[in-house]
Image (cartoon, rainbow, N blue to C red):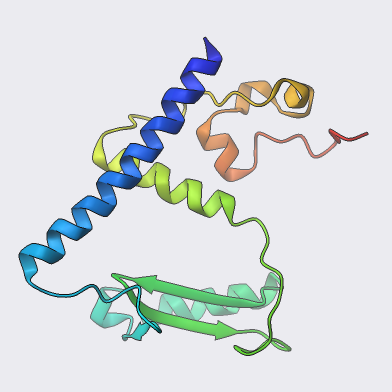
Amino acid sequence: MRNSRSRVLRLALLIALLAGVAGVTADLARAGTEPIWPTQQWQASSPEEQGMDSAALARLIDFGQTRNLDSLLIVRHGKMVLDAYYAPYTADIPHAVNSVTKAVVGTLAAIALKEGVLDSTSHPVNPAQRWTLWFDGDKFNLRGSLDGRAVSIDSDPGG
């Protein structure tokens, strides 16, 4: 039963992603404009032109300094509104990217919620059997897996 719910959730997220892409394509076709992304590089825009507050983004940059971020990139409506780097990093210094899966799944979940494909983030997510003891079962739902509450940091699945 749990396995089938997990499959349904994965299918719903995939459908939502495809619906979102189809919706964007249809909007562009109606508008008679070409996509602004992906291209060779991001088009830049001011935060205000994209409905964002520059002061709030400045606070976000300050927050990133306290969290040891390497860089911070924000794109809204397909245009880059913020591209910040924290010393010693610069745009031309490659560095490791970790833990992006949560952001991708979170985006898919948001699309699924917006499109009505997913009615709640409280649906359970079924971890692989060998990981069962590592996860806090009552919190192992979509919401918990996105905000990190589903994992017990006192346990180690390998040890």
